[in-house]
Image (cartoon, rainbow, N blue to C red):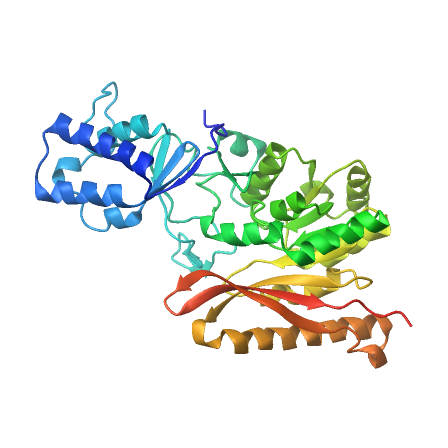
Length: 414
């Protein structure tokens, strides 16, 4: 039965020790099969070149399989009762034994769209890893109640746990993504001056501070806020598998977590209940629903005294998070200086110009929010600035994944 693994090492190739283990596995297979044909040796060299290990799972590069698999390696399924099967499966047995892992797979970047059984194209709104391919080990059933997976579905799935920045993160690789390229942004948040100043303000007035993550996933950035000292994070995600991963990961880090029950989502008392739980020490509140409902949820939590001032909002959707900016502005506590962390893809030559365009749009949203709350004559009393643009990583040739730290000043009291 697939379970969450207990080993939390994250390995990336190249690396001397793990490369030696991979080399030894391939040497053992080559010796066992007396293999020396150039086509097979070229394939094995591609296998050795690039891979990543998360806990007990090894991900091989899809580039290794770009060419046709040599005949020597055909037959990836292990015949019943034959532990020394030839072909790919036997190779995977050697790799698993030497690398001390239990599961092997390949995956590709998350595709932006998907095709239905009727060949209709639609957006991949759940950011599901549609190109994930299990190669070795039991990853759990390949089907489930996708829109609303059950406790039984979660129990039957394979879960893997990795540790980055001394934080555990858990996910089911068949059903949700894990982006190792975000680690520099996770690290940056841990010591970001605006985060630390919000934490210090909360400690000073005894109220603490909160952050909102409108695309929380498995807790990529939410966990960094919590580790940095933010008292509470409230997160939204459409993918129930991601929410369950965030729940598991929060538990592994020792944080109390509450997931809104589906049957209670239409009840005003549901958030009141969350408020009671929050007062008892919950650090992470999760909603498996569209983040367009975040504004109402936050207001309800404020009304029952369950939420510290919201000082930071994460908008982590690519290629653009523009659809969430209005929500982000609305949920910030206007009595304090606040920050939005906006993830966008920009052409490398246009970063400065595009960052200023984002600032202008968010200034208009802030002015609109101020006008609704305090009258149109007071619009413009909150200043929006771009504090910093973090060029996180390359997204495509000539395109950079950027994170904009955008500050919004508090509404000045007369």
